[in-house]
Length: 136
Image (tube, rainbow, N blue to C red; front, top):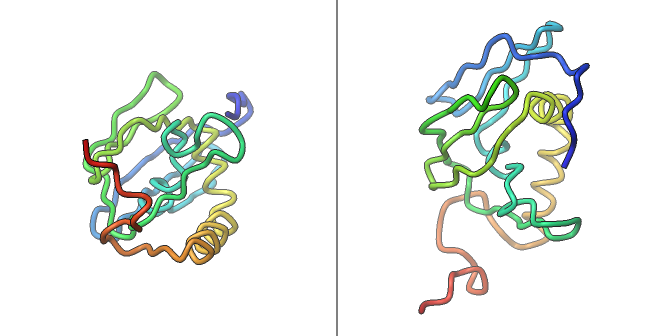
């Protein structure tokens, strides 16, 4: 988990574009980023995605059409989106959002490579057999 960096620019504007599924961020230093909802979802800072330590990350699949249905402010330092697949535990600090924006292209490429290695898809659909929750 990255700690808050007080030198990180603050967002002056956050807009959700539902049609294109993009979060538009404008920061106080003039930086402007567009982050896809899918990128935000698959790089969620939540424990359920990140795991509880290095190497425990859970590859998120089938998120190509995920939407953000709600966006709540968390204090003066973060936002907490609710995604259309029900995921809502990720708290995105300003410095994490800035980091995602700065590294967006690299992160996206790594995500696509990991999907390919796993033989997984961005398209929503049934999860591979071993990823289905076991029935009780």
